[in-house]
Length: 86
Length: 416
Ligand SMILES: Cc1cc2nc3c(=O)[nH]c(=O)nc-3n(C[C@H](O)[C@H](O)[C@H](O)COP(=O)(O)OP(=O)(O)OC[C@H]3O[C@@H](n4cnc5c(N)ncnc54)[C@H](O)[C@@H]3O)c2cc1C
Ligand SMILES: [Zn+2]
Image 1 (cartoon, rainbow over the protein chains, first blue to last red):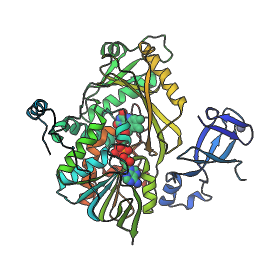
Image 2: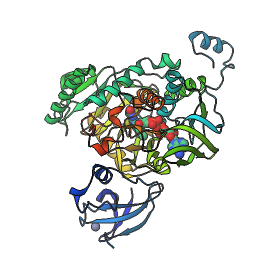
Image 3: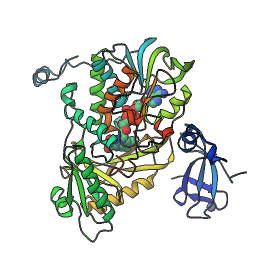
Image 4: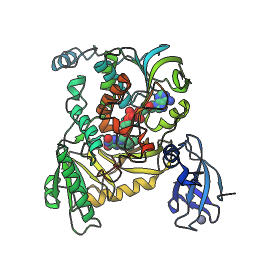
């Protein structure tokens, strides 16, 4: 079980959180202008990094806020936890 | 290589079993091949075997970074079935099941395929409807399938708890009698032996660390045992698909997760079928050694670690005891994890890639063991002909750009 330090609440067990996957996938600003390839990339293609990975988490059983985590997917070491857009 | 037969086993037995040789030749890679398969799991080895056997290609290598079968092939819970809902999936899994039925003979290697029947339980009205729908769909696709109500479930599997008092009562189940289990290692070893016999080079402890692509075409492979020139390349690395794709410079829609399993201490035969439940999320069978083999769902986070979260295991133990109170005193012996490549629609990706000469076979996620023979068969055809086998065609990478997903998520009874 990971122990994650929510930037708003402090250290809690992983079971209080929901995993949101890869960070920085932002919804296209002008969706109607996208072609099929761009939609496919946005919806489905993922980095799936082996190593240091930037991801988002949701403190669903706590403050119910989203935040960012940098975690190594081969060791589970969390190197950074911070608020989105900071 | 020595053929297995009643006679050869008897003769060896009488002479102290001194005449057995290694089942395959593990060799150093040459510096050039017509086809290289990256990944020495069941799928990669089956691909190499059928490339040599069905397509007469005789200059092939399989590169495995550890030992043969050290990935998910040797870590899975070995459930083999073909009762998928959608036409595309049921065709490829049924093709595979038919190959399973003749596999020990084909390979002259006992893969211990045991058609002991698989029950997929239903615990709610909606699940009953979905299960019956799947039975009808299976029948239309000429796949054996039956619906059992809870009384018949109890008759088929005497130790299951069908009490109405339980939190999620067993209301019925689908049954595929031709489904069952197989010996995972034997599948890898049997294909390795068969491929090696046909002249395929099996290179263990040989990790691919880079791919050289020029003018959008594969040129050579950089490995821990030197560079290898190659005409065609098949990537069959399960959880490491995205890593290899990145080396070649194309994108995949995969996420890698840990999937755990565990076994109990061995006990006398008590469970002679496979029982799976999607709703309470656990599945169990008994191995020939007597251990209960138990599995459930993936860990939620992206991970390349072959170990997972204890909370997943404790959840599946709760579910197991709800279904089988009789197991409450059993001790668990070992737990482990494999890293599985999960695709957005829970269906595999087989076929060409944006790079000429590179073919991809992955995204089997939590349920690809059952597909091993069929996957190798269609992938070999695809590589040999530079064109997808008709059973593989719907599973192209392009479906994610065309929006033609094969959404078996939830459609299948359970993920495995
Ligand atoms: C716990 C668990 C339970 C499962 N239960 C079932 C089940 O009941 N039924 C079912 O049908 N499926 C099940 N599965 C899924 C099934 O195991 C897989 O889908 C299937 O075995 C994949 O086979 P493969 O040959 O593609 O992969 P693998 O056997 O993982 O082989 C891929 C190989 O590629 C190698 N490799 C990776 N990177 C490199 C590199 N850079 N260079 C060289 N080699 C490399 C790896 O070392 C590995 O040996 C389960 C999986 C797990 C983990
Ligand atoms: Zn919080």
